[in-house]
Length: 347
Image (tube, rainbow, N blue to C red):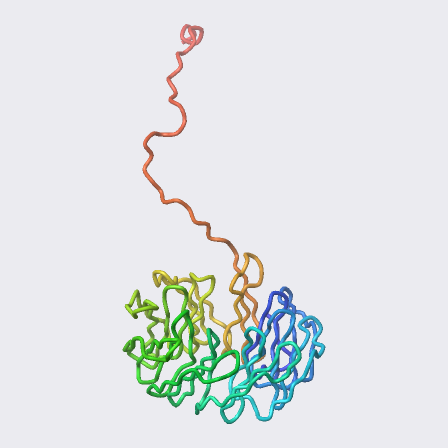
């Protein structure tokens, strides 16, 4: 655990070597992932989490998008943006996506920051975006929009009951929750409703793997549904109300953020796993390596008061064969030896 020079202004980002956190003092700091030591610091203000991608860290300021060298913090390029960002940035393929006021999505080249395309999303309220086969955007007032990654052209638009949660993607599906206690699966190509699921509380977010989609709602229940048809596989209660969308790690561990507690579940069965209670409220989503290794830092939690906690797994769970009854005892039979005559005579 360490304390940052100043409280964070947003959540952080992590790669294999470093952790990147924007500070309320209009700076961004890079920490060594193994030791927590400061690697570099830059005078850049940001109200959004950075994106760490390969050897580059992308940071959106009030009027510019910065591409920084991940190792040194040196500027690779800076690209002006006309208005303030209104959603977290994302990187995919050859572009970095920035959503700016009032509702434009701007795609900038990852190599030099030049504008590739710009398109109005037609959403309102609080926005979120996710990248799959296209760019999927939700506005909290009920709009769901899909834009082409190549040129930004609008592929489809759907209207659902507000307020909407951030979108989650999977092959062939876009998942969105609502404060009307419903969870919706949309066809990723057409935007048509594939199936809905009625919940007992406001849906705050979802995550999907190859077979299942998991969503958390304010009825303190996390549910696992079949990704294709919406059939429920399992549901489990959570200790308190969730505040962060679910996260999937290694395809078999589901993490639910209960702020400041993180709870884990087995994705196949819903069996509860370990828990970690942070000493203060979280500044953003926990930073988790999707392919962590034993005895190395696997998760980092940034708290609003400026403290940062690094966690590592202490052991590996090896898959063992189930116990079966023995058909024969191991070893060899031993017969009783005859007492020597000299000892018998002595008695």
